[in-house]
Image (tube, rainbow, N blue to C red; front, side, top):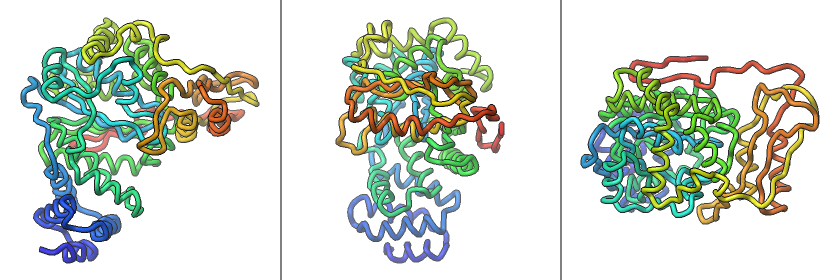
Length: 442
């Protein structure tokens, strides 16, 4: 078998066998196939695509390129959640303790952020002492003891994906459905999940900007999951404006705490109850999605979910006093109030611009080496549909560096659009994709 022949076959639009895909992916991972041939292969896939069987085989080839996490020592069905990323996306901080509080084991491996704001690990590290580096034995013991643990991803999971993604990034082949879907699903499958709930964003702050593209991506990932024996559900949600009101690491932790007390933003609460309802159902803790969702509502109202958050933080070395009193979390030295220059209705809050504004303040990182400032970020005071008067506060920018503020305030101000007429607000949850098909709400 030769790499050249496989590239030629895909370039001509022919279907690749499982053996050919495994040969190419594993050869590249070992270093036997050079970058230039993988670049040619990626471009051939970009233009010619792959059918369901090919995408499933590509995913499994990436899974088999490295270690696989064995979660069999944890009792119960392990359901993982993955988000395609967004602005103000603190969903895991709420969702993990919420579903764990009703008896669904959460054994989650998360990553750091690159771009707008920090990833889940960066946000958790806003809590003093929080340890994301548990050993595999500690990780499994903690999940068995209290039902939840969150740690950093190992580089040995799906190493083929890491190498291929770096190459996709410099060869204009990132936005290919087979390549995106296999990249995401390979890490989830290698991570030991028995069922997967996908949080697929759509809008300006999302990877997929339009709804139809988001639905296609969700369908592709659900089909991969089902083909490789993982029950998979995808929920498509709005990311035209940020999720919730807080963007920035410690600010998002505060909002997550409020949400687990039943006092969170409507959109964040709705998303966590929806994703969580499917997680509870797939874990076999409820007979259907609605029953699962109602169990979670009860956990919020009773205080069980908030109590689980405190237990989780304490178990991983975090300062529980900061959960009881969020004002003890890292705090920026100064706050700048961004004021409206006209009266009307907020018709747009561009998520991408808000995310970039938070990054300029230091809440995110442009390169892997950059250090995050956990204390800075943006708090929105107005969202789409709100009435605003001239001189009212649109957003508060929490900052430590005046020069960084100058860059951030311009782009955050440009994110807001105000009109004399109210906007038509579409449903926040756009669609749900299961093995049975697509259920649209818009």
